[in-house]
Length: 387
Image 1 (tube, helix red, strand yellow):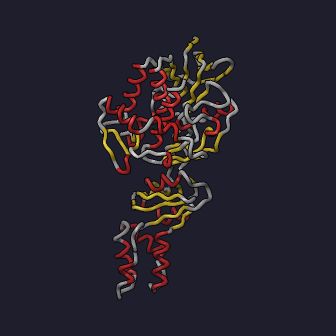
Image 2 (cartoon, rainbow, N blue to C red; image 1 turned 90 degrees about the horizontal axis):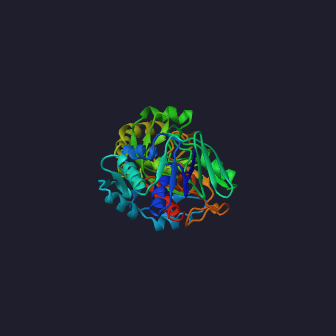
Image 3 (cartoon, rainbow, N blue to C red; image 1 turned 180 degrees about the vertical axis):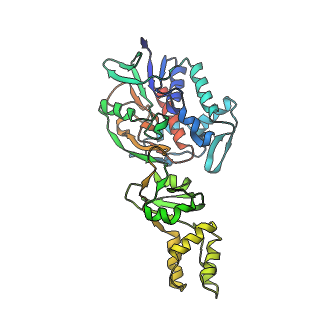
């Protein structure tokens, strides 16, 4: 069966749904083609099922890209306030957590239902369980699935990155970019837990479940937040944030007591022994972690020099992770379609007229806290208003 439309959008995730709704509102006939059995699958599992759908303080500095200026145009023309207005129009209750993170009060399905409704009202046709076999381009674009052929002068690629393959993630979008001669920035897992090597795992991972407020740093970047010890390594917001900047073989530095002078009370006291230091350290860290750290790092004496060195190590614990938990546990993918290949205003390819790339498949990756969804909405809206 042959279907003819004005616009074909590959991938019914956050960016694809937004793009489809915006294009449909402008009178375009739109086919949204999705390989799995449900639109917005990653939306549904995000934010612990509550969907951290945007961030009130979202700005270009919250994104990683080979071109840090590329995201500015789309983010300025579709802001977090615009998406909040859409959420409020649909009467969806929400709340703000730390650092401007906005979550649904009820369920992430409120967001997918909202986007489904917007697409339906705009006349968008959604084709689920449609595995794409090939894409061709002559005067227009032809997309063939196992049972149908779709034709349109415009093709929007919103197939996402490599993160969470169990939800259907593949490298198909990158394959298409290669097919059309577009460059790709090297990809890697991001917002992902670290796996520690055998030595550190043996020293710390029996403390699985223990968390502490830390500052984690690498490659000139630093993030403050919770660190969680897992049975294989480290996780928690500070670790997930810094993982987006980490490259294999590099070291991370962890400040276990940011803004705190751990040994001050000991230096000022006449009593300098392990018990005194342990007591002071347990005021800063959870008791089990404080005790373990001291067992492994305590100096042989408590002279001023030894205390100074101990203090320095507490604020600069150097770790070399063995790896990350990979795309299976990564929330997003760093890298993707090179932004030099795309118009920052419309997301259209500079090489192939009518070909657009939006969302996670593009080399724009947000920090933790709703920024990646805002990029999906903004890039989707940019393309949807341009097609």
